Image 1 (cartoon, rainbow, N blue to C red):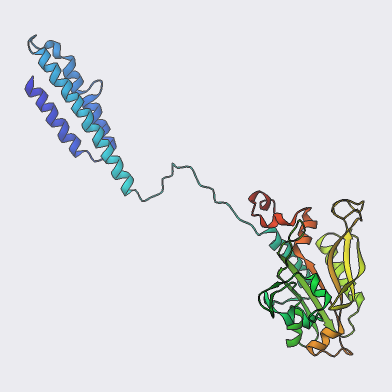
Image 2: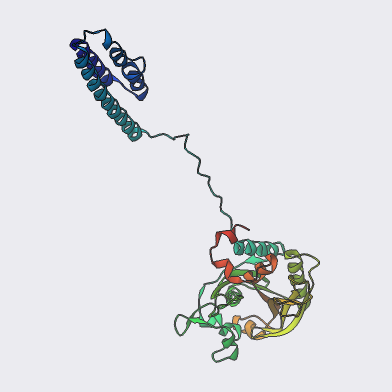
Length: 335
């Protein structure tokens, strides 16, 4: 009896030591501890032993059973830790991690759409610095120091003569200084003003337009802007040109469209007028041409400026400009 217990223990421990994977260990566990296993069979046959040997045999067999259970448990744990440590592949049983696709910001989408329209109309894209000199931001555009129009700009001053540009209009004198007519450009980009509410943010986007050549008239301005409005919204969109004032254009006009919210009936968005202002425009002021050295007797031109956020708000029916910059993924996913 004692020799049988010792042999079972020796064979079991040797087999466990040689097992190379969890499957082999599982088979050994069944072989020695299973319902029809070696140790289980030994315990069932104890009744065949002489009566005086039965207690001792049962005790030794139960001790060995507990020992083997601990050995098997440790062996399984050791193999699992080794398998996890050496594993360098992909566990295909894990749930997948879906890759989220991004998209262009709605402001970028609208800016691209506006640029595409004017590119098809023969305009080129020009750029100018966001940190601008006082001269190009104001004086070259017929806004000298102490001019009342500077109060309309709410300017961020970096120093006495350096500002964060308040509009993309400085691209006009910069391009005209380096280019002889004809000129046909648009200039998209960031601009900055000290203003913040539901329709204004300290940083926003504008697209400036400029066309200069011989015999350019206000009729050309109306034709270009009407084509732009109809392509951006639709051909059923009504628009009107309303007299206004800008220091760098004369005559000047605001362009309004029929309110897209109430269809002209009058609402909070359009202040009960039925119309919404979308851009400013006008014929280039002779003083601007003189500042860049253009012959005012030979050349005429027009300019316009449109806020991209305003166009996006009207196109998508958004009532608060700040939503564009709150980084709310629920809002941005709609575009």
